[in-house]
Length: 448
Image (tube, rainbow, N blue to C red; front, side, top):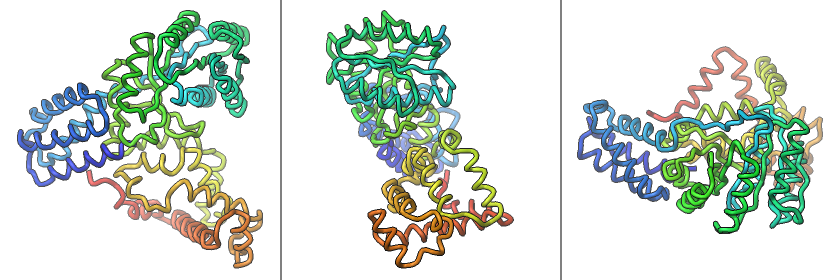
């Protein structure tokens, strides 16, 4: 995400590299580039104007005049203003109500609203330890009711039954009554979406809001709509008392205009962002971390949160014991690394959070398609072959390639990768292993 904007801003730093201090002249040139970058990212024009003016005032202020590193000085100001623009801090869900706390989900059709209901329910259940009930009040699209039911079942979350013959308010009130009687902490209500904002849709969701009196009314919108996402959010906010926004499909949005404009235009915070299609692909929105990501400085804190939430502690301890001993690392362990990458949103999501725009620099072989292929190859091996990779000679490799729908060359590539990782694990087991490894990766870190 934000690839285009990040690349543009990196260029601004380079243009200032030859200057000894920030002056009115070079700041003017840099701000022209930043303005173009923001407009190309589909940021609303009033937001761009205000942002540029605030950066200009601070960049020419006493805090940075005479700086020996003007590029860093300007980026520091831009970082602060980006954070402020997006809301400064994470605005978490407010569930401090007499249970059940009701969350009403609104949005247009195709924004990923029903999927987001499932993702949010999973997050509340597993991270916040809440007992969650979900219900669909979308009586215009029968598939939506069935979709939520199937999704809830797969996540082991209870879904209150509904059908297209019922009125949305009747469904919601019945679900609320059931949630009270069965001691649920949270009730998430999925509402009907439309292709465009219309009077009937707004009237219906207003009725639902009045009947339920939710603690949170969240607007779910596709980030890839850019400026249209902001305009739609404003239309909903004018008609409904929104408490926050969830931006979906952020992983597919290389511009980022919606994330940079919504808070300023609507006055409502972005509470979560959807970063993949996986049920784990919903992250709290931290303006400071997002600003850091935009400027190519990475988002290590979010990466740590991903690891904590998706890595099995028992498996990690078992692997660490093997690393310490310097032996025993086999293809089962190698497979576990791929599975954990998938759980964390895939390789793209991991690289996106590392500093220095590593995702753009990473070789083509590091991608989710290759990971899926590697998993298929390992799954086509026998348990003995996974434990003892040295058994894999020509005939076995041919059998594995046929079973996994790959080529013998791809099987060899996997085994080569495994061997490299295995050697790396042995280095970790020796004295100073971690320091040696950090030196090897030093060239990937940003110069700033």
